[in-house]
Image (cartoon, rainbow, N blue to C red; front, side, top):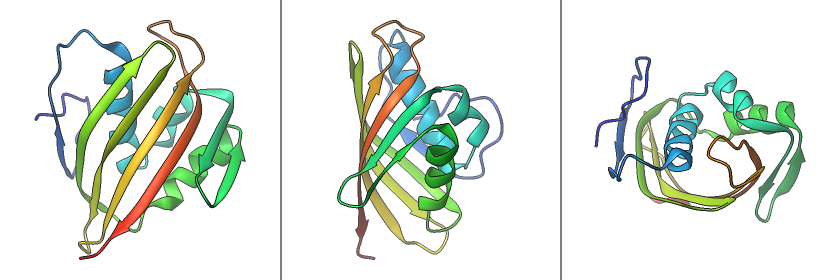
Length: 137
């Protein structure tokens, strides 16, 4: 349940523990914490220059600047809670699913599908397909 990420976060983070030997799962966990905390620096360090972001049914963005700026704007307010229910990785792909809760109690369910630049442990993210659903209060 603990986040295990350096730096103080002012929101609750829950995430299922895993074997501790899955670098891409750890990257996705830290990325979602960075998204919830609007840490554009962490995002940019872990995206390829030509990253593509597909908000399903809305728009497709290209490049680090557009993608990280857009990810920071998707939020509805200040994050109060981040609940990561599933982190899955295999080879050069991965997925994360969970719920964001904001300080005004609005909630967003998310499922993000990732494609990494390679299957290497230190690969950067080159593509994100994001499904976002506002939840009723």
